[in-house]
Image (cartoon, rainbow, N blue to C red; front, side):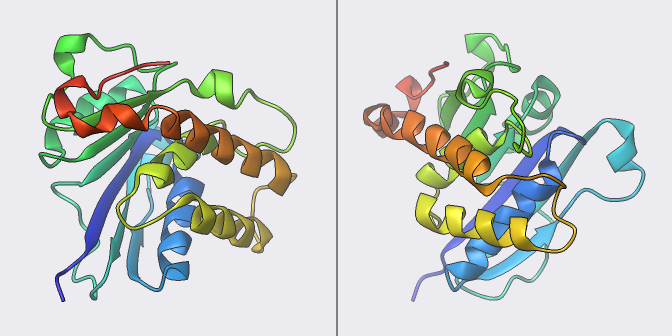
Length: 202
């Protein structure tokens, strides 16, 4: 049986919800019956501004949580895009917030899938929403090699039920944000077959 593995970097500002997005991805991997590692942002990095965490979902045991060459990047801001876009594996997946990442077309690679998601439009701030980036998470699981929206929503439910979950988090509101992100990507799936033309923005 061949190894199935997906190494994901979630990057952005420390207060953009990197921690909970990674937690949900890791939980989704567990619910899928796969081996998982999750390395959230930690220490002084959390207070310094920009940060990142990693999640590995694999059909075999994970030897190390360190990700040097990710299969996928969820970029919440321009700094995350600039820092990790060049490190993505050829054939990899970039899902980014097109509201905050205003990059020139020449900055995008033609050997990966680059998917811009208009987070502010799909998940405007409202009571109960943990982070608008839930829309990015929904977009990612809709394109993931090993995960899907259904298991992602189950993981969201589980994480929000845990002790220490963000106060006031509303499952219905966050679920809707994820579903909107997934729908946005699925409507444009026809663009995914050719990397060169897989760049689009909201």
